[in-house]
Image (cartoon, rainbow, N blue to C red; front, side, top):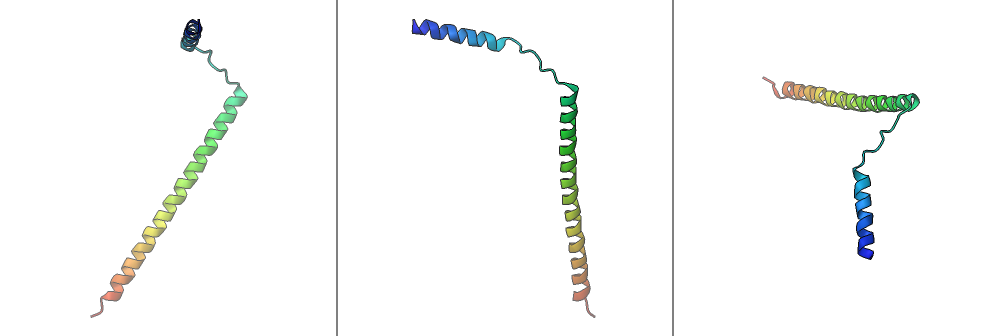
Length: 77
């Protein structure tokens, strides 16, 4: 009897799992809020990447100045 009840419950769960769920309806306010949040995340990521790029350019510039200084210093006729 327990097996039959467990099998019946399993069959019901499998059947309900295959039925398509009704799509969620998003209100315009929710859509606008999600858009704002996505735009904010995108802007934050862009700012972070721009900062990394500025730092890398600064490091490269500094390394170039250092190499030029070293090259000029070592050459004395």
